[in-house]
Amino acid sequence: MRILITNDDGVGAPGIAVLARAVARWIEEGGDDEVREAVVVAPHTNYSGMSAAVGDVFDHPTVAYRRHTIVGAESIPTFGLEAPPALCALLGSLGSFGVDPDIVLSGINAGANVGRSVLHSGTVGAIFTAAQLGVSGLAVSVQWGENVHYETAAAVALEVVDELLRAPSRTLLNLNVPNLPAAQLRGVRRGRISSAGIVKAAGPRAGGEPLGDEGELPLRLGAASPELGDVSDESSDDDGALLAAGYASLTPLRGPHEDTDEAMDGPVAAALELISRHLARAK
Image (cartoon, rainbow, N blue to C red; front, side, top):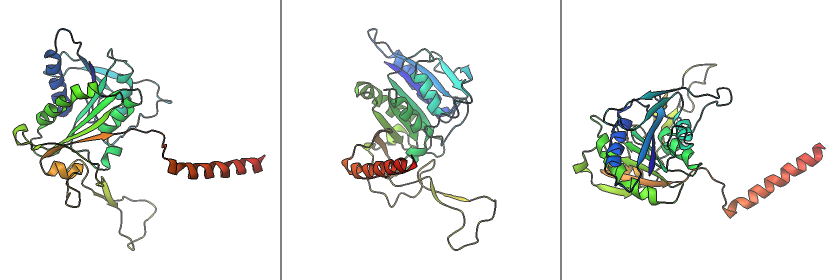
């Protein structure tokens, strides 16, 4: 059982340190007949909101790295890369740092990743990327607030590890945990991805002053991340509503794949016909 740990907040962030210490304890608790290993491969600085971007690897086909030490997890080799989380997950999943992982643990992110923010989250983007290589993943986030309880999120995450190791390859789970002591956690539920977004509006209102040649668009941020805003319009089993109610939310995800829905056959066939006609006329 081999684990790759990464995040999008950077190798020095408190969340990844708590997660690494929890994994270090998990390794120590393993039996003699069971191989347990882990490696930390994470960005050298904060890359939040990078989704699954790997950067321009064609113009910059090398990645600088530096070895780090996480206090309390000294037994786990730790590397900080000048790379976004998806590239860290990619290189780590390829075994570039001495461990061929069975799963990727990404986090613990400082702030919830619920609703449409899963599309933009570097925490989630890392496990999407690893899944393309057949590696399962768990993205772990904790609701933002004062005195963030990373330990609660780590404890819930470690409960999931064994099941994730037994699950089919490419299994992806998104775990969001409320900012509560473990004793106050009401439980864990399967959460649906809500309609909450990171950005609700931008710029001047319709009918206002026209845009100039340059300037700045003020953003009105939504409820998705990092702070959990108003979730009163969500269903009780939506991920954000579950967090607000004191439950951890666990959501299965699926990475990019071909859309095999039969409803797409007609539009695709029509597009192919139009393109073929255009190409025939161009000859």
